[in-house]
Length: 221
Image (cartoon, rainbow, N blue to C red; front, top):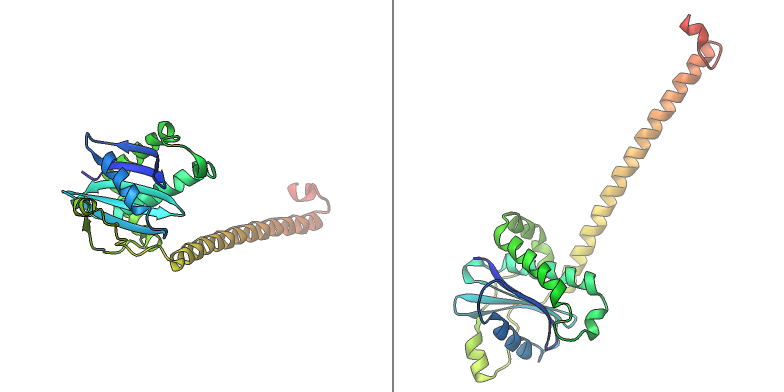
């Protein structure tokens, strides 16, 4: 079944969401927002609810959340959250800070719908996640039960290790390495083209000298 619900929020405010099924996922997500905002640290976290798991990524106050089937695992849902976070920040920038509830819902709910379908049904999504594995640093975690936590009014515990500075350094190193390889490739291409041009010009000058003229008329006779 894959991912069934996606949401982006700031603090207690829901900015955009999409529900692929008729469920109470939106209500549970709002309760999670209320509890998770008691903390202030960036984190990745998962919570179980019946046969579903709510996966949450919090970065700089922006919260991206999805509900997935328990059997779907955690790696692909967290790759989905990372993708949605990047798209949302790139699209709205500083407007996120002061936007009212559901301000981006009309536009961004379509993005959530498209990405939910892609990560749930496209086999390339799992291959993509393997490439992102070192970047997202999604690790095996304990799962708490949402109902028990909400009933006792307790604070939700962060159950996944938060993204560390080492993760950011890894991303930066990969980008720099890729940029360096591209620069080297283009340098080699430019050098090869330059050598070919010099070789052609040298041959032409030699023929012009032998044929006593730039038009090489004597050599054509």
